[in-house]
Length: 149
Image 1 (cartoon, rainbow, N blue to C red):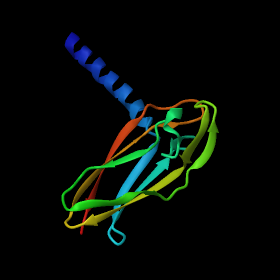
Image 2: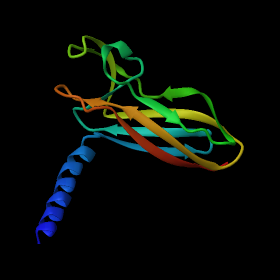
Image 3: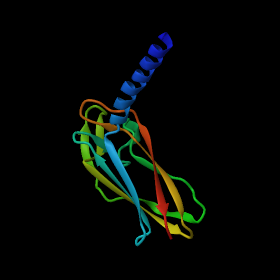
Image 4: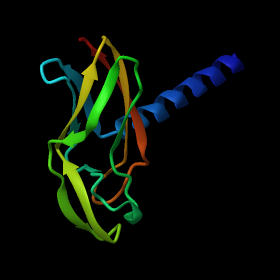
């Protein structure tokens, strides 16, 4: 009986502590393949009062800017660099002691590819989100996209 109670308490702790961690992402991501333009389109919806940092932000200030890493797939080649369709907003941030560039509400990114054969692209988004009082430690969010020629 004691072992059953211990197992129940352990499972309860896992459930209680994992739920808040999942809720701290504050961004919902979606990535799709646009066959006509030969682009991966990544869209992020950011929770109200939260923001992401643009790569335009000086890395010496402290916030971790959004980065996107694509895996290498034979027959699918990345062309050029990421295109951020959503312009970041300049914001004087006293917490970091300088000008930061942030996205709020929504964000859209495009990346062109040359496709010789169909495959699956896996990308990883790395970023941190903050509101006016706190920041959540940087996280990696993997996404998978089916690419059809």
